[in-house]
Image: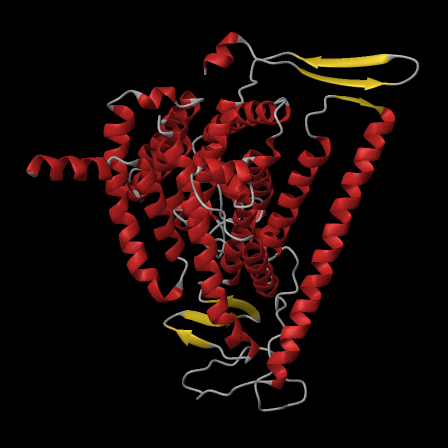
Length: 496
């Protein structure tokens, strides 16, 4: 009896799928104001669980060496360890804690393609997508009526419902609400794929529910006025549309190329215009509703929005759901100039994430404009230096080439699977990373979800493996055929 209990506990704690779902949802809740403190404590406790999985499931069984392009990942971990040692007198243990977080992303999330039980992973994607959609919808649904009534207040140091004239709901800032809403919309797209639902051994939710929830979350994303989330969702649509239009074709006439390109551009322009108009209409409509149905709470509860009252009206003006900051770059150009100073002083191995703020106060007058660089790529080169950045880019290039080949050279119709959706998520996230705290150096849902999606996509990448196949682009006209061929990678690269 005792042995059965012990074996059951062992199977539970050495189950990477259960850990991934628990960890991601915990990180999700760290973005929710009311339960953030408890979730932050749990997230660090869960890192001990991750350490057990990495050692017993990946290192002890030798599974870690089966991870695709693992040598780049190991080199990167060595590089950031050197960074921590070079700065050992400044936040050494915090830098090593960040290294542990990065190892979790590399091995437990991206490395999931080494697991034998693939059905469990498909089920995991289904459960995670459903949970994120449901929780995001419920949080937005609870906050939306309050925004319509222009009710907003402070909870400890956080603004609830409205933050600087933008809809933040119960999330710690509007950008997170926008990102979570965009992710939930994309996940709803996942759940409409019949082949994926079949592999997950699950029952597909009714499509009308998925559409209704997605439309509502889209409205909430518009009200958050998050430009980066808007770009993220728009590029997801663009990437998926590109695949749908150019799928499975490596041979085109000039006429076909022109027609398909025109069709693609028309789709993107139409989607962009519709989303911009819908965003403007949503903000105007809800702001007018808030103006007509405003409910006053005691001044000790509510905090008036810092919007100037040109009519000297003592009443608080309703929200307009637009940025108060009229600077389009939101200080990111200034951050770029400030990061150049840090790169100049720590070019090879960087500063380490924990030293970003203290070193900026030492070398930059007034320190960083924000506490973070708000650019995933810039953060990597500043924190891990040129050496770490080159290693990471090497990993990214090899993985991108492998994934593109597997997606576009597969003869099977992949539109019924989520592989194109996963690829589109990754592509749009890479664009999104130019504007937010993403990719690696943040222990957050926004970062770890990327590595989870990368891991899910790697399952399909290796299933429809076309790494050694040639990519041929043929253009035909009446006079001649032109063929351009790109060779497959060498045997050394394939072995990686």
